[in-house]
Length: 402
Image (cartoon, rainbow, N blue to C red; front, side, top):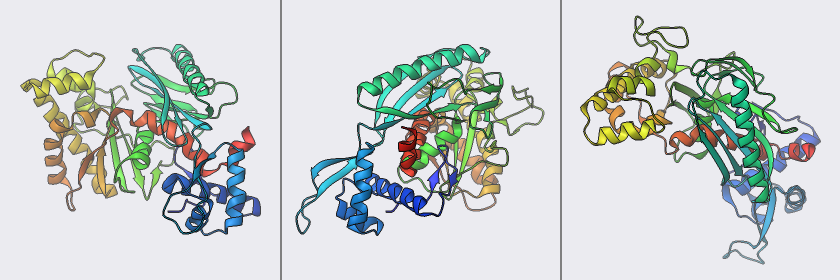
């Protein structure tokens, strides 16, 4: 497996590197890293075979990547090969790390992921952010980021960038939250969030959740519709391995698709939106339960115990979700629909009614619905891994910043 010959924006939008000698060197550095990531540990000779360059050329590239702290030598390569074994190369466990953060309606979370994809530090605070002004939330998240960065540095890592998942629309500048109805934020610039000199990317939580599914999911296709839920409901579309953003970057707002035009008012200003029937607060209201810290755990426990009010609320939510998904499936014809976030934990009770509506309303063959193994961790992991992917796609940029 060889790497793509282009760089990738941290949130999934590819951009071509210049077709010059310098651009070719940068692409080849990325190809070496991606080969080791996908197939490693590998010797220099094995890397050369995988990407189709000479051993001498690969050796020069490898030496540069080792100097940058992106690769490390583990010792003799894999046994069973003809000839003298070379040193096995692996992605560094003591180099750059991706810092991911999430601003949720009821929590803040930060993690650090190394180049190998291992979470090396993590911090979570449970608190109600709805209705709070952005400034104290940003201040508290900044403190969590600094804490996680300090822990990562104790592990021999250094932060390559910060990516923040938010429950709202994000401008093309990658830092401004245009609108987050469930936080009641408007035109909020998060540029002051990262420590000085740390590159920042802000994106919608559903986008990061979908990218995490693409990069970390088992057997996930390259064309799918990803749906996730917290207080609200978000969706993201992956087409041929790329995130579909739309003209303004706002694609995927499934939670504000009306399923009952004359239904209850929504925080977005509309009426009868899907969130009013399948969001976590809506399900709790329908089940007659109060909101708490572990909403999904509470609903799942009650449903397992046979609480008919909870089961009916989940059946109704699944039906509403199926109706909303019908339009997206008919329009986009994805290979599959993936349920992530809180929906994954409640899938045993959501899926039957969801699939009934989806199957009965789609024009083509039934679109399969699968459940993400990442669950509510998807947006946070997607954010951190987006920074790691940016390093792997253009390792020369790391040297330029350092």
